[in-house]
Image 1 (cartoon, protein in one colour):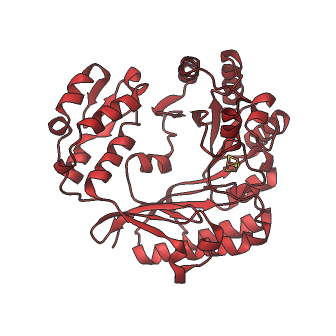
Image 2 (cartoon, helix red, strand yellow):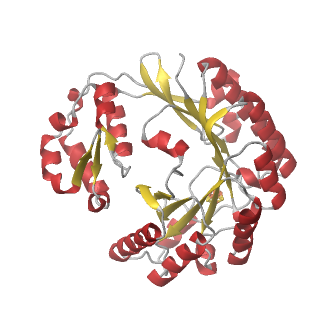
Length: 392
Ligand code: SF4
């Protein structure tokens, strides 16, 4: 089925060391499988391109895992092969890097292969925090990576920052943000630490070795961090994402706007149109299954997404945006009017909502209560109201 355009995410499932808070799929002992996995990823990308015949690839995002942890000759070759398959990327090409991988040579490779945006998980410049997070770097190494990027990287840059770390106080959190922002990124993703089940940090928490910040402290810290970022010129455009004007992440906007995307590589997920409505196709979080290749359909798990569930996904993504959810688009895709199907919730939340043209958005205070708002919407939701879905 021809699509107007689509985005592509590539998951490189390798890391040098596993961070203690991370539940993304990656392995640390994969050296002997770098080449086979990358070659299978290329094969899968080719399959997507041929099966769907896109007039254009909107954005390409290579993440993981740590793509930049691959040896430079292997990474260079892989990026070159990807570009042979996709010579033209319409609006954005991002690659994730970590401080311990950044060298002038790496940045040159990325630039030569047409990468337009680099995204680095900085997380913190405080050694206690980096240690708590189990990062494979320290403050000195991270500062030198930031300086190297500022000297040698001509493209856009995003830095990820995490706050709400056990033992962290407000002053430390704000100092961290100021020091990282001093390297002048175009975009900052600011997250509050979450304890994902099964991670070493989660186990430490459960065994009482560390203590979570209280919810009040965590919220106050996030609010102060947000104010700081806004005061130095970063606009919040999504719950956890901030940018200078015009530097929003186009790739991630695609997720929040529920545009079609392909995910290649172990753990990569696609949301694409099927023969009778949207489908989700998940690559396994297992390298051996993925290497079964096209013959075994890469171990895919298919799920046909029913219209009511897909509608709920649109709500959960759309209300994350400061701009709000596109009410006209909802009407076009699901033939429903939000006011008609959520009269009680929209009335009750009126003080926290604002209509800006075709967008219905939570106010700044409302966005802090996003989870409660979504839960009220879901409580009022009657799936029988959603009968059709014309997507994308
Ligand atoms: S480097 Fe990134 S993907 Fe790898 S373990 Fe750390 S946070 Fe997870």
